[in-house]
Structure formats: structure tokens, C-alpha cells
Image (tube, rainbow, N blue to C red; front, side, top):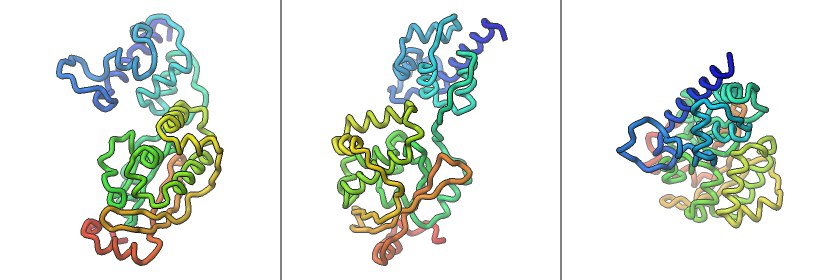
Amino acid sequence: MNENKQRQELADFLRTRRERISPEAVGFPFDSRRRTPGLRREELAVLAGIGVSWYTRLEQGQDILVSSQILERLAKVFDLDATERHHLFVLARGQVPTESYPLTSTIGQELQGLLDSIAIPAYIYNPRWDIIGWNRAIDYIFPGFERLPAPERNILRVMFGRPESRKIFINYEEDTWKAVALFRATSDRYVQEFWFKDLVAELQQTSPEFREWWVEHGIRSTCIGPLELNHPVLGLMNFYTSTFQVVDAPDLQMRVFTSAEAETTRKLAESVEWQGLPTT
């Protein structure tokens, strides 16, 4: 492929990926005057932290130098999978990207079916601790979870960013400290990823507790253990939490909540909202 053809391929690739992004999904208000699909170039530039005139030249196929750091930003905004990211780097720089760990953001029907078949609360999460799959029982023990916008369905953002978490988690300081220590222990391979740096910076800015505990460099190898929750309807509930590797998707984990005592089991079984959930 000659250089002109390659630059045009890059331009077309960037344009099509920009056009498939819903403005409302990334925080821009609905505008009935939009005449083209997807984001405007200036909106894309804002999200990627780059100059709009520079990006316009790139999308027009002009001969300009683009760094791998800029390509990583674009890949993040475009939510590219591993194959698309590889394609972007080859078109823009003529080389494959360095090793990275793109985040899995969805699960297939097989894993969702597994979650739906489980009688106890369970969810699946990725290395950033985004919860990308869950069953109805999770939405019941954590009321309103399902209604959260996708970016907020993150374990750390829920624990540190939502005021109601201080009421739900009875041992709030202990539970959140353990969460920080476990996140640090399980994320060492991701410390150079932009999403990792962005999440840590965000939590350090918004939460004094996270900021304090992050610099302590606490390490915890497991999340197995008791968890006490204060349900707004049922009151005190005691669980054991366990985490399992998803063998077919090594970057994903499944966390389950089992009743730690008979009273919690009884409350769940007698609850009207609990009826209709799987029993096996």
C-alpha cells in the first residue's frame, strides 16, 4: 500500500469510528440540529485531549506525524477492540502497538446466562473493576445499581463516590481499605495503561479516603471474607464474598455473595422482591 493510499485508509477508519459514537453516550447533550451521525470533530478532540485542527488534518489524510500516545487516546475514545487498535497503529505508524491490555466492556450471552441461573447475588467485572454483567439479585441487595450510567457501574466508584455507600457498607472504612489493597494487588500489570492512571487520579481527587489509602501501598491477595450490608428494607444482611476466574476470559472475574447466616437467608427467601429469582 503506497503512502497516499495508507493515509486515506487511516482517514476513512478514523471517520467511521468517530461517526459510530453516540454523542449522548459520552456526555454531550442532544442536539436536533446535527446533520451527520456520531461525534463532531471538535467533540472528539475534546474527549481525546488533542487539538481540533490537528485532528482534522489527520482525518483528512494529510501527512502529519502522530505519536503512539495520541493513538492510545484515540483508541480509548473510540472504544476500539484489540484488532481495531492493531489496525489503527499499522495505518498511522506502520507498526504494531506495544503490548497493552484493552478492557473488556461487555459479556456474551453464555456468561450472562450463567449469572441469570445463579440464585445468589453475582457479578462479573474487568481489570478496571467495571461491573459488566450481573444478575437481578445484585440489583436487589444494592438498590438502584442497574439504573446507574455505565461509567458509574464500577466497584471503586460506587464505594468511594456514592454517599449511600457509607450507609450500605456497615464496616465502610474496613471494606473500602480492603478494596483498595486488593485493587492494587491485582492491577500491577496495568499500571502503565491510560485507563488505570485515569481511574486512580480521579479517585485520588474525589475521595480523601482513597487518596490516603492508596499511598499506603496496602496489598491484599483475596476478597474472600465476611461482608455486612445494611439493606434499606431488610436491614442487616451478612454475606461471604468469593471471587472466581472466568476461564474463557482470563481478564474477567466473577464475584458471588453467599449468605453467612440463617437470618440473611430467611430475609431473602421471604422478601417479595426476591421471589421469581432462580432457586438453583
